[in-house]
Every structure is written in structure tokens, then in C-alpha cells.
Image (tube, rainbow, N blue to C red):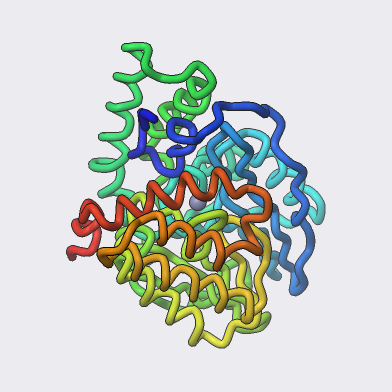
Length: 326
Ligand SMILES: [Zn+2]
């Protein structure tokens, strides 16, 4: 099967999945709720035939509210805005865990609606705008022009192109390229930077008061999204999350995890990477992932297998090695 756009983050399914778009309505956001400590989770989505939205988190502090990651689609943005309007705290900060479009695309609209907001993130997006995203946009434009793009994927791709065209507006106001403790919106948070993990630099948050780690795409379901990853750095980052003292993990995609769940996910990830770096049949790597992560895959097996096959091959090909270089 032809993969027309493997390079556009987490859009791989639009081109490679066994089934084309079959649903236009995303599943219910079954895990959008208050999770304690003035914190609300807005669950992302990953409906068949549609590119994903990452999870968003709203944290309330004495001086306002913080949104962690802003999704990709308009309906996800609406859910964030509804969450923000609930308590009437002014939005003062956005924290982006990383630059993937399913986590930053809502930035411009939120900034427009809340001019005082400051965006915190790493500077890795600069390299992405000049490199990965520019290359992806070029490939998308070609695919749109030459008619090789499946009709069902056009709106998704056009949406991402519009976001990339506003790339400068996605950039952080406050660059956090090394780990540091900060007080944002009156709330003390530890911003941790993982180097060469999901992207060149990823931000994750340790909220010590709640013993909670908000880890972005260091944890994702139904598969790890390895498009721009250095697997070794990612493994190291997971070690750091495990050592943080967190009792609850908020993943970039999927439901909340306790430590036992996180460790099971991590173990499946460790095995998948080791397998893909080895010399055995890649189907065995996908099978191992499907077994180890079965809890989170549920009946989404066919899609998860297609993605695991794709990412296993990506790891084995050596194409990700460049993401490990300083
Ligand atoms: Zn994501």
C-alpha cells in the first residue's frame, strides 16, 4: 500500500491504513474531566481517517490558568475554550510539550483571544519549521497538486498547511531549552527538558504538589509516534519520568496512567525499540507491541499493527539516526 505522506507527523494512517476514512465524527471524549489539584484533562482524539489531536491539560493557579498543548482541530480548540470559560480564570500561559502539529495548532487562536498569554516551549520548533515541517509542507503541496492525495485526506492536509504557513505564530515567547523550576500563573511547576527524544527537545512538566507528570508524547497510544524521534533519547527520558516521583502520568495521547500502567507501557516500548533495532522479523516487533500495549489498543488492533509495522521499519532503516545528533 502506498504511503503518500509518511513524513507529516502522525498522519501516516491517512495514507497507509488498511481502511480509508470511514468516520467523520470523532469518538466521545471519554476521559475529559477534572483530575484533581485544579487540573483538567481534555482528551485528544484519533478517529479513523483523521489525524490526531494530542491531549490538552488546563491547570489553574492563583493568577490564572495554563493550557498545556493546544491540539490540532477546531473541535479540540472549542473543548479547550469551553474548559477555560468554566471557572473564568484568565488564560496567562500556554506550555507546548513539543512542536508536533497535534499539540501546537491551537496556539494562534488562543493567543488572539487572550493577548496577554505567554507561550512556553523549547526552541526546537525553529529547526522543525526550517526542516521537517517545510519539507512536509512541500510534499503535501505536491500531493495536492498532482492528485495523489486521497480525497478524504485533503481537508486534513490543507488544515496542516494553513498551520505551517503561520509557523512564526507557533513559536514560544519564553524559550525553555534546559530544565528549570518556574512559577507560572502562581503555580510552581518543574519544567523538564528531554533532549533528543520525541523531537530534538521535548518539554514535560512535573507537578510536585500533585505528584503528577504531564509528559506529552513521551507516552502515546495506540503506538509511540516515532516520526521525528531519537529512540535512545526517548528511552532515557522515560527513565527520568520514572525517577521523578510521579504517581500519575498524563500521556500525550490516551488516558491517564498510574505508575504500574506507565511501567507496563514503558516496558512494551523498551521491547519494541530493542526488537526493531535487532535483526529478527519486524512482524515480531509489531506483535510484541500489540501484546504489551493491548490494554490501550483495545479493538484498534488493525490500525495499531499498521502503525507499529511502519514505525518498526522506520527505526530499523536508520532514518531516525539523524535525530540523535546534537
Ligand atoms: Zn501527539
